[in-house]
Image 1 (tube, rainbow, N blue to C red):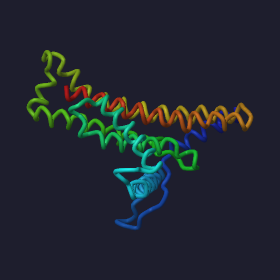
Image 2 (image 1 turned 90 degrees about the horizontal axis):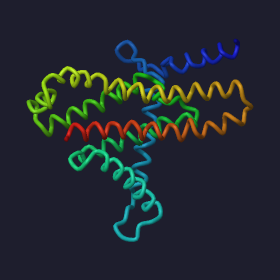
Image 3 (image 1 turned 45 degrees about the vertical axis):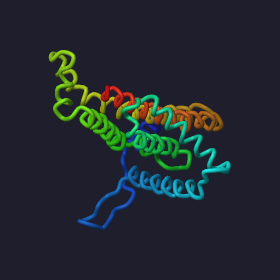
Image 4 (image 1 turned 45 degrees about the horizontal axis):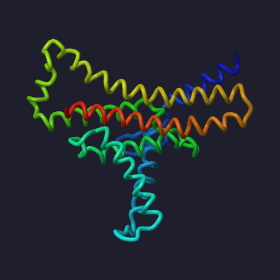
Length: 231
C-alpha cells in the first residue's frame, strides 16, 4: 500500500506543472518548468546547428559533414516519401518538430523533466500540426475548394469530416502524452519491485528508444495527414 501511495505521489508530481521562475513584468509572469526546459532545448539546438554547419565544404567533406549529411538526408527522405511530392515545402517544419520531440523525449536521461509530459506542450504541438494540415489544403485548393472538400465524395459525410478537425489534434496530443506518461509509470513500477540495476537497463528503452519512436510516430502521422489533405 505504501508503494502504491508513493507511485501515485510521483505520478501527481509529474503531472503537476511547476513554476520554474517568474518574470517580474506585469505583476509577474510565471514560467512553467516545461517551458523553461523547452527554451533550454531551443538554445542547445540553435547553438549545435550553428556549430555543425560551420566550414562546410562542397568537395572533400570531413567525417563530421558526412555524418551530418547522412542523418539530415535520411530524415528528409523519410518525411519526403510520406508527405508526397506536393508537400515538400513543409519538410523543414516536420524535421524541426521531429528533432525537438526527439530531444524532448530523451532529455530525462540528463535529469530534466521532458516537456512532453506536460499536456499543454503536446496539445500545442498537435494544434500546430492541425493548423499546418488545414493550411496545406487551403493553399492548394483555395478557401472555397477547402470548404467544398468537406462534402466530397457525398455531402452527407460533411459532419464527419468537420468532426475530424477536432478528433485529429486530440488523437495526436493524447497519443504522444499518453505514451510518454505510460513509460514513466512503467519505470516507476520497475523501481518499486526490482533491484536497482534492472530499471537502469529498461531506462535505455523507455527514455531513449521509446522517446525517439514517439517522435517518429508523431511526425509520420502529421506527414500522412498533410499528404491526405493535398490529394
